[in-house]
Amino acid sequence: MTIRRQFLQLSALALLGATAGITAAPALAQQQPVTLLNVSYDPTRELYVDFNQAFAKYWKGKTGQDVTIKQSHGGSGKQARSIIDGLEADVATLALAGDTDALVKNGGWVAADWQKRLPHNASPYTSTIVLVVRKGNPKNIKDWDDLAKPGVSVITPNPKTSGGARWNYLAAWEYAKRKYGGDAQAKEFVGKVYNNVPVLDTGARGSTITFAQRGQGDVLIAWENEAFLLEKEFGPKFDVIAPSISILAEPAVTVVDKVVDKRGTRAIADEYLKYLYTEEGQDIIGRNFYRPAISQKAQAKYAKQFPKLNLFTIAQAFGGWTQADKEHFADGGSFDQIYTKK
Figure 1 (cartoon, rainbow, N blue to C red):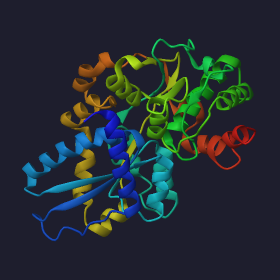
Figure 2 (cartoon, one colour):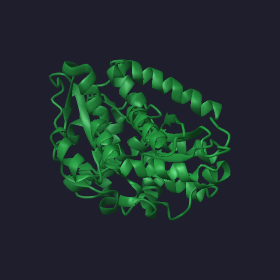
Figure 3 (tube, rainbow, N blue to C red):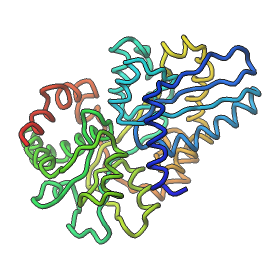
């Protein structure tokens, strides 16, 4: 199956799952089949198709129990809101810690210490943000600067609904802040970039489809793994540009405490997330173009596929997600101030 078909088919399945509110009855006995729901963000579809098959095989061999893991995908912020509104996710594997924190603050769906329950602050994989251009790079795009030039059409999703879009936005902001001298200059620069954005999709995969399949835009601001998937699928149609500086994206995973306690699935949900940190889990992560966070073996195996970038963290540049959300993405924040001027 090609990635182009997977984009559409998995997106359709994710929509059906999200709108249907997938649930399953608690396991009545150890050997009874069990179903988990993983509510995730847009570009992890292929990763979790691969990972879920491996975990189901592992769990069957360990316990004799059949497990089915259902997937729901969309913009990370929108997915968090779906859980808050009652979607019964056993685990949430969202694009950023800020969206997981929203599950703590809005209804206590997740315990406040969730980042301490798994290694590496509950981030089993990392990624970053790169630029994708059409083959031959006709607009000669080399770095963030070029995205603000007149006549360059930029594709990026809506940071109000997409976690990937927030990483994109902050990466561009910090680049401009460092190059031009401060937040005021960064705001002006990012405003110019968004003046070049013809459409804001709700999630990162939607923007990928807009760019790759609908042919819109000169450059796509993308998750690194999305860029590699495009390169793998379409080959000569696209080039990946590594910018001079980018952000270290640290997607976060957690059990959804209220749901697993209600459904009696905490033990298997915990094991499911811990399996991301095993050698097999880390290898699957690398195979799907995410950067393994723990395994040195997997890091070495997949090192050649990842460009060496100058990366900064959300904590270093913005004081963490709470502060970044307040200043940039809350109602009236910098994004609203920039985008409402269009």
